[in-house]
Length: 334
Image: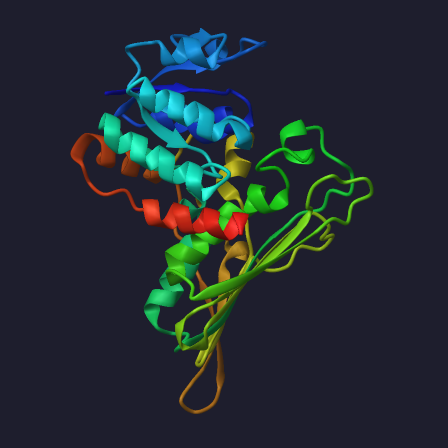
């Protein structure tokens, strides 16, 4: 059993970490940091609640620490956890700069502990659908891919760490890690890239629009876009190849189900509704257009924690690599 502590019990801790650590037989959800309201015990009666990060890190029983605090604290807390001889799972963004990431990976090797990036969107139905279509070869040779996160929030949000100009704030660092990780996982490492950010909401202090254009071998173009001002969300994935087009909306089915109180152990967890399936349009040898709905795979972030477990317990390589993360941060900070 890998005894695990979570550094924050806000939305990230309550939705994306605690339910899965509690469900997975290889983990024991041991402790959490709650600075003010003590709520974790209502869902997890045996959990220890600490007032500070330092108190949790001093707990000798804890093997793994989940760093899910504000972006600008990731480096400091992850480094502290490693120095306390804990394994570490770090929320996105892994940290703010590539130099910080390199220091964390170096420290992990020095103390013989693992530091793993939490990139949960690799375990979503939409990503898995895109991956399966790419691997099927039905698109032919890829020409271009468009990936988006569209939201609409005209007002300035209440989270200081996201809406004020501190390191790692703004939309690029909030959603960019998801899209860049998907890009790297699907297409590998780009030859070059260019990046643009914008500020459009009244009185915003941070970017609320970002776009990155990445160039791949054989002229393949990848465009990733994130915006806070899209009233009508566009398709999250559009892939065009020499033989077809695949279009997939984003659903966030796991987040919706978790917010509704569904357990990750529920048989219906992670199953998308049929109207959210992706659409593959291809051309037959006779020149006829053929339209096919691609059923979405059942998804679960439990599979991420299974990969964490296999990495820590069995030494099986973790799918998100050190090189992936350093490149992601070089693109974000460049």
